[in-house]
Image (cartoon, rainbow, N blue to C red; front, side, top):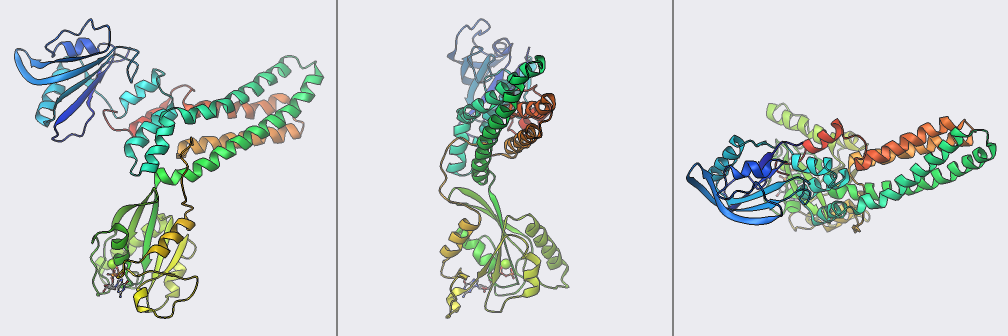
Length: 437
Ligand SMILES: Nc1nc2c(ncn2[C@@H]2O[C@H](COP(=O)(O)OP(=O)(O)OP(=O)(O)O)[C@@H](O)[C@H]2O)c(=O)[nH]1
Ligand SMILES: [Mg+2]
């Protein structure tokens, strides 16, 4: 039996309307204590118009949606109250519901209940959070595919195939006297596992490609003072975010911005020009720049007509980078194959193309994919277990030893969709959700 939980599902600020949701077995009882209509015996879903009451006093005029278990998002009795969107009203209503027996929901608790009640699997639950956090249409579309259950669906045959191999192995272990079966089984194990490894590797490849649409990439602009780093950031962001002057050492702190590069959310960092400095503030800026360099997926190493600094370059050359020649409007003899930009003339098209090449950003095809760290980690461990099983089978190891790794792969496949015992790991996943979702 689940307690009745309550949370505001809309942003906690002034708006035309607000949506407060509740879920739990006693949900209708709790709500009836503060609503002008008695909903205790509600038998079917419906829309109710009325008042939230504190004793006799009308607190707000509301519309209330009642969902009867199991036909709700969580699979439990649920209510959505649409009130006027003043935080004063919202707090009053939630306060009354808490007094009537509800408790505040924790982050993601509604989704967690939907998962625990078997309404959605773990991949679908993760997709809900991804949908909410998506900043590009592509990221949102990829999440939608998983939310619809299509990603989980393409994985089910793989899970079933592993289960089937395991059941065959059990026959061998239970009836070892039939040697013939064992011989064919080992060959079969190798063939079947190899096919599954191939299928899972395809999923990994697809997921790795799609991952950047969801997670985004970090790009840092690095170089000597005054080479035009901040000017470049401003062109990318299409706003004058960073201060630009002709004084070397203008940027001290990291200036950050985000933009959409063909569907990939790019987190861009403008850094303090790197040089030996006795200025304490500048020194701090430079050490912050070094940290950003460490964490970046790609570095744009900016060079202007004052020349290429080998010492600085050696600092970034082992990281993924592009050498970019700035202030192209001042350069008359451009060399082939070099990347030129002019912030002054708003011309960064060549650089944009090279960034896309470097980060493998092309046209995204929206299809089912497992593209977050957890999912890809599980798929990779499945491959590892199955490859070990194949190797053991080739070495003619005893069948029960081979089965240990196949069993581990099977367990991983259950973890992927969250079909294994629902554990601490799932708590961790839901804790990243918003309250009210
Ligand atoms: N002609 C020309 N000048 C540019 C261009 N980009 C930047 N500048 C000039 O170069 C100077 C330095 O530009 P910033 O963008 O502040 O350079 P920075 O690398 O951020 O400098 P620090 O923050 O001091 O490290 C300014 O006077 C800019 O107007 C360009 O494309 N063409
Ligand atoms: Mg700057």
